[in-house]
Length: 134
Image (cartoon, rainbow, N blue to C red; front, side, top):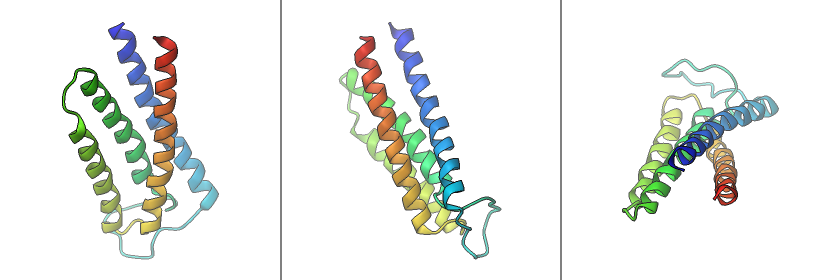
């Protein structure tokens, strides 16, 4: 039982990462927005909208935080801080992309939004798969 649970969690983490990357690639091709015309502190290529870092951080770290939170709750341990730390990490990643000059704020917001939608879909699928497997 424990092995099956860990495999399902690992699969959901992989799906959240791969799906977030794929969705970001599709959205960038649809919108084709150029990067800010500023001096970048780092080299960045490709389209700007939505931010891949913000989107994938939301999907991947969001799922990782959710899985940690869920496992702590199942063991009756405090888990609130996991959501706070996950939120701060994702916000810091998004803010760093603006600071580095490679994204407009709207790119970051769109990345958070699209990543959040994908994360919600993954969490719902994880919950549905868990109910069927129990």
